[in-house]
Image: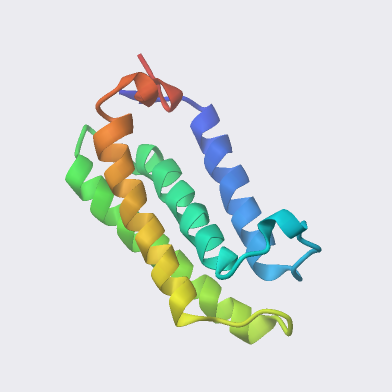
Length: 130
């Protein structure tokens, strides 16, 4: 399958948003979003999205298992690096083990989501030319 060029743009925009959200001061959040551990949900979604967008970019010759492992390693390393950067280069954020766990759960869910839903349906047309 041939990758659509826009898939690279999707990944670039997602990574840019992840970096911005992770390394800038928290903004005023509407009251609707104030509930306990909302940040864990945000971490989960950010890394789920990162993983789903990484997989098609890394996929070569329909080697899905190898691609899933590589996506897992890259996204996990990115999550650990981001937690380290939050605690070392910002004064307004801190690294958290629970955030890293939420990242990891998002990564695993992203791989499962890709395998069970995107790969097996027409949704793969979002990333690949037919």
